[in-house]
Length: 312
Image (tube, rainbow, N blue to C red; front, side):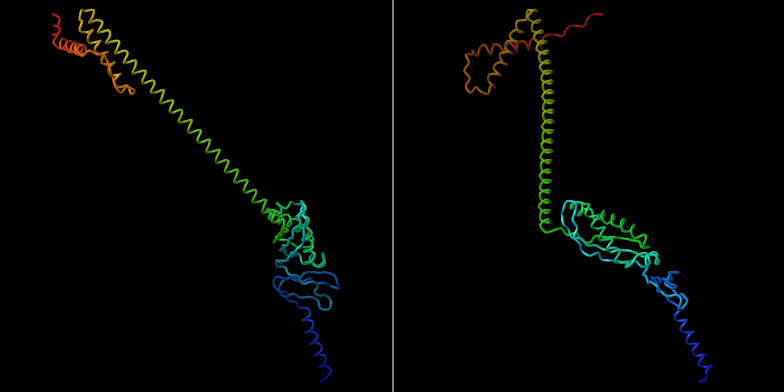
C-alpha cells in the first residue's frame, strides 16, 4: 500500500470520526446542553443536531417530561403539639434545561429536600383537626411555596399531594371517643328539638281546639238566646191573646191557659231523671174539666162564622 493510499484512508477515518462526534441525536422528551471549553453555549432540541467536534461537548442530559418524586415519611409536630407521620408525592417538569442544569446541583435531591422542609413548615402551623380535615388546603399551600422556590431553577411544580397522615394510636383512640361523644350530643339535641316541636304542635292543636269549642259554645248560646227570645215573643203574644179573650168575657180562655200550664208542669215532673215513683194529690175530674175547656174553646173557634165583607 502506497503512502498516498494510507493518507486517503486516514483522511476517511478522521472524516467518519468527525461526523460521528459532530452529529448528535436527541430523543423526544429530552434536551441536551452544549458546552464549549466548559462554558454553556446552547441547548439541543429533540432530533438531529450538529456540534463542533473536539470543541463542543454534551453537558447535561435532562428529561423535559413531567417527573414524579416520592416524598419519604417524616414526623411533623402540629401547632397543638401532636406528633404525626406524613408522606407524599411531588410532580414537576423542567421548562428551562440550561437553568435546571447550571442553577442548582442535584436537581431532584434539591426539590425533594425543599418539599420536605415546606411540609414541616405548613403542617406545623396547623392544629391536628385542621390538618386532618383540610388536606386540599395543605396541598395548595405547598404547591405555591415550592413552585415559587423552583422557578429560578427552570422547573415548574405541577402538583403536590399528601398521601398519608398518621397520628399516634392513642391519639386516634381519643379522637374516636371525641367523635362518638359529639355524635351522642347531636343526637340528644335533635331528640330534644323533636320533643320541643311536638309539644309546640300539641299546644297549638289544643289551642285551636279550645278556640273552636268556644266558637261552638258562642254559636250555641246565640242560637239558644234566639230561640228563647222567639219563645218569649210567642208566649207574650199568646198571653196577650188570652188577656184580650178574658177582657171580651170569654172565660174558656182562662181554662185553656191554666190547662196548658198544668200539662207542661206534669211533663217536666214526669221526665225528671231522679223521679222513680210519682205520687200527686190530683183530682182526675179537674184535669178532665180543664181538657174539656180546651176542647170547648176549639169548637167555638171553628164554629164561629166568618165576618161579613164590608158593604160598598
